[in-house]
Length: 474
Image (cartoon, rainbow, N blue to C red):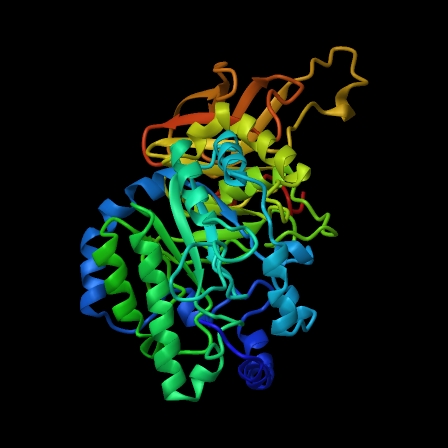
């Protein structure tokens, strides 16, 4: 699809009028959705919904087990190095932005390094941007020459990614942005029916290629349905096509339909029980490569986020933004490798865990599998300095959890297998005889076997506390 300069100028004029709407509809990464859509809260069901629901448990079994995935944002914006919204934030005209396609020249097989890092990090699946809002296709397509085969890379980057992920035994996911800043009908389609018809056909055609040309695909991750409604996108027809071509796939809720799972972004908000969900987050503050962004999450933050997500029955999709040549920023490697080393011995506390009814605790977090509770102690209590002046003082490290029910049968340190002693009363469980120094970093996990499904309700014990003589006149 070749557009002349007059067409581009017309598009720029049209898009300028719509730009404020686009920014309002899609803040930061542009992943945000109206609240009802973000929660998948569509009224009523359709035949397609019912067909998807009938096979959902089977299709999503691997995904619930996996818990942890790698998101990859990589495209022309990586060349600019100012994150993925550079075109809009910096007001780059389309003809100028198109020049980047000639300078996007990744090194061979960069995706192999991504997949190997994901494997070392303990991630079980990957989701790569096939087309972001900029409209550039990282794959071979017959529908536009604005693609990686006919431009700078000179090869199919999506195919390289698929082959790399499969080589490491990882599940394969495709991100696809419905919104398109480059296509001349990308904004015009809202008010011009002929433009809508062209753009919807183009969109469905690209998705059909992705679902046809790369073998079995495990996840389709739609993004930003601006500026059309689900009816205007023909989202029912879109999903029907996807499932006809990929019967085992799972899809998210960002084409305006509920899909198989919801997608909170940059925050952790569990969906209602029975609704699958996945929090996506950046490793720093940018999705695409941003050479100036040094706000890196620590391994402790990532491990705690993973626990919080798992506790709510969700998944954690953590993003990396490769450099223009596909290299992984050194900070990304360092953080993810440390998380992976920790998961090597603590993965049991995450993979395949169940939703856990446990309140917050500033010192620790919780996950659960069946009747087993995993206490993730990220602030180790150490000993009590105030008592050190006592000559007979023997330091004892205690982790106490108030409101833990039901009866505890046994406990051990997950890192070492060391048995942990405990006492339990109606108010709390006290795990005693622990080492002075935390046995593991960035968190130490205590595996606790109970005689029923464990719950932690710190507030439940408050009415039961004996107040002794507090408030009583003597």
